[in-house]
Structure formats: C-alpha cells, structure tokens
Length: 78
Length: 142
Image (cartoon, rainbow over all chains, first blue to last red; front, top):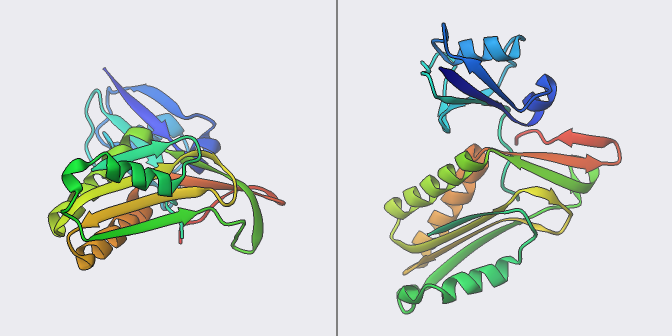
C-alpha cells in the first residue's frame, strides 16, 4: 500500500532526495503526498504529475500511483 | 513517427537523412520537409555558458513528445515526424533538439514543426542547469 514520489531539478536539490516511497494510508490527494514526503511548504510555481500526466495539488491519488513534483520546465532551445 | 531521447551528442542532418531513407513509404509522398534544430549557445542571460546538464523525467518525456507529435498528425496533413532531444551533459555548439516534419505541402510542414517545438518547450519535463563562471544555475523559464 504505497505511493512512489519523485522530485526533479531544483526541488530534488532542495529536498536532497529524488525519490520516496510513502505509505498511502490517510493520503487523499497530491498535496497530502507532498506534505508527508517533503515536510516543507509546497514552493510556488511547483508543477505536479500523477502517473506522468500533469495534475493539480487537490487531485485525488490512489495506492500504487506515481506522483512527481518539479519546477517549471525548460526544455527545447532557440 | 519516431521520438528519441539521446544521451550522447547527435548529428541532426545525419539523423534526418537516415530516418527518411528508412521510411520507404515516404518516397514520393512528401513535397515539403520542415526542420527545426535547437543548439546550445555559449551565452545566456548575460553569462558565458561553459556546459549544460539537461535533466528529464524519462517516461513522462517520451509520453509527452509522442502525444504532441500525434496531435500534430491529427491537426495537419503530414506524413511523418522525427523528434530527437538530448539529455545529460552538453557542450556549447551541440544540438539540443531536432524536429523534422515531412508533408505533402509546406503549410502543414511548417505549422506542425512549429507546434511540436513550441509544445515541447512549454510542457515537456526537461530542466536545464548551466555551468557558468559563477557556478551552476538552473535556467529560468522564458
């Protein structure tokens, strides 16, 4: 009964970890996942993804989900 | 349609030529090929850039790029798409991204190519960290 949590880029550096596995008990939404794993307020402009689709902090999550937190994206060039 | 995430430096012109030659069904079907190549500059936001690291969320990146290329294929009459995007350590003058679109006519080829690179920049989960004389810094979004 767990949720995989992933952190990228500046958020990964800030938290000092790239991945976490948390117990899904009492976890209802993405914001709960952040609170249990990160233990600091969610930084402004943080983007979230649930199972590799963009989501929102109030989005429900289920056992077995992968939830990711990351800063605004900067791919491409030119 | 082919999407490739590349850890090592690539030559976009060779990749485009190879992709086209490997698609015999394309022959005779396209009259227009639009290509966008993005390359790492040696300057950004007022600083000299010595190197860059591109981090990404691998499975989500692949999924996102496949979706964007698929959307382009449903919005415009195009024949094929090739997208290659680097990750890992890059040096100035190395290509970061290549988008190639083959279509019967140029309007669709240009529009689809533009759509793919713009959507990639806006939404694909990549993050750039530059090495400058002042140290490492995360690149701010445009």
